[in-house]
Image 1: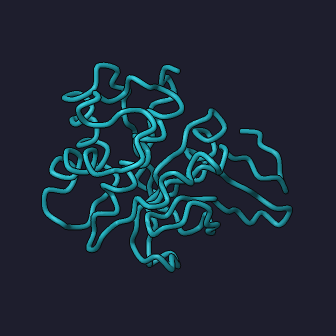
Image 2: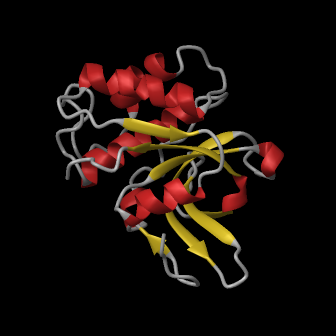
Length: 187
């Protein structure tokens, strides 16, 4: 896959500022909060009919209604999550609540190529970070919307981190697993 080196490829960072206050309150609910940002961005910028208005209206600033419906499906108990779990349960959530349900896909290892592919096509992607791989976030879910590779082959993501930042840059080597919509998402 071709992408430019020494140049950020990203979705508009301003589009993620509205989700800055969408912060994981405690524990391991980062999978739910990252999924909420992924769903909200998709509804706000790609597919306005993704979620029913009883759960969220396009452009809605607060995550409360979406989280209250999403969390019992994705993380009924405040425990860590893995990519397959989030993908399967997010597919169940969308099948139940969405008229326009796109398929959710996952990778269990790595994440660079899936993230590059999705971001290049105009979609953000959830990325699982591992402490074992050096993540200063510990084991955590974030939403990536930009990537960069320099001439030395060092790779980075620009992320929304669910900790109050919508513009953090992290090494791509921290990634272990992705969650994204299938490439045939209609928009």
